[in-house]
Image (cartoon, rainbow, N blue to C red):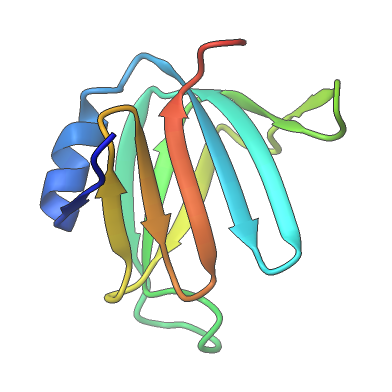
Length: 118
């Protein structure tokens, strides 16, 4: 499949079409690898100009809906809250290949796709 690069506006427009679907989110940050599954009810963004340090991002993508996080090969636990946040930066690269989104940040890579096997 062909990877296409998106603007944040194009990314938002395409991701909005997945509202009401069950999605899988994979996060890879340094040595941290997480997989989550959630029912995507809505998408929102926040901006925090009062950061404590540079580790906190100014912009955040908030995926809203109930979900669960994979704790081991076979087990899942509910997410602590009904949303999942992805930190966004001005340098974030948004990619789409007709089946999944990839967000590449200075911290790591986040992949969002429709969950087929849940």
